[in-house]
Length: 398
Image 1 (spheres, helix red, strand yellow):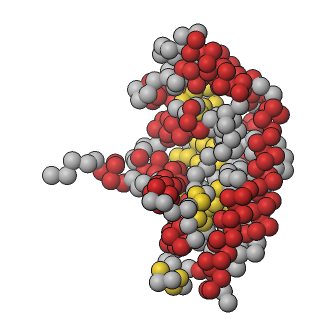
Image 2 (cartoon, one colour):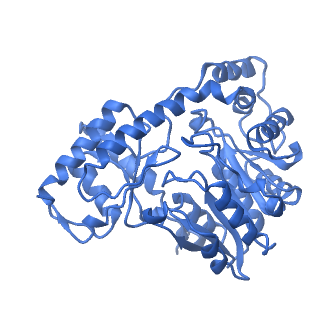
Image 3 (cartoon, rainbow, N blue to C red):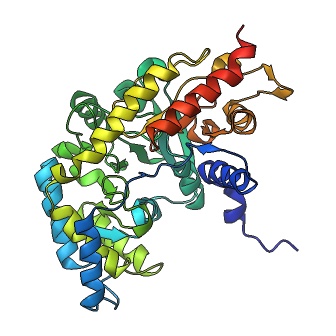
């Protein structure tokens, strides 16, 4: 008798963790692997945030918080949204969660019934499709490619909406592509979505601050879709607080109450010490943490110059986040050192086993012709990684 539920059988393992775990195993076996798999800033948490955590421990913040988070933190989130995004939210509209992942799941659990459709502009973050499956929904992929800077159009969106569509879920800035939707592009999308009040927009803005060109626009800034939009954000990327697990959603009142209801039956409030430290992080002027973004931009420029020299890689200069997502379709269908390359997952495994560079294939991002590299690593590692890839591919391009 099979004891596992159909729900868990529907799910796959996160490909980012599959590849990062494989890279760790090889390192443990004494192999010199450069892992560019995980989307994790390689900086330490800023000192003022760490001090706030120490203070919280000494002040005995060791008891349960309210389910949606401490009022002071929700006020800080609301202040940040006004300061940085010109968005008006009350603390009652904020739900602080155990990372942005949980914030997305709270929203999906609140709006998706079995068989409902959720639109996913592709490429998308690896967990989106799995989250939709977990909630009994069906993902509908809206394909984009490097030719369109990995972005869909408002026309594409309108053609995809049906009576079964319950939500659209996307990230801007985007993991994995490093692109973002402009003000005008989001305005066009908002006009379309406003015609369909049964559709909820889930806007994942976790990479908001890591934008090398401009201030990131939130689709919630357009009044016609404010009541349909859940803004998702958190502390992991901008503040290098990945392990602290603090995310949040900002929603219309009807949806915020539902998110609190879901979370109250699952995890209750997030870690109290991490919540207190997050208050300090959000109240600090964002320019205090700009040094991380400056370093990321320098690495981006370095990798772009090196990656352009790798034969068969079609690469777009990322405008945000800290990923490259080159199209490697040149190698699909080829045999490399005895390995048949059927898709980019095969190619990523070939690079790991032969060049000893870890990256993530694009199949689970909805783009089987691309691979994702994180450049949240030292310049020395990035130079060496690109050299290894170029060298291992040289025999197949002579």
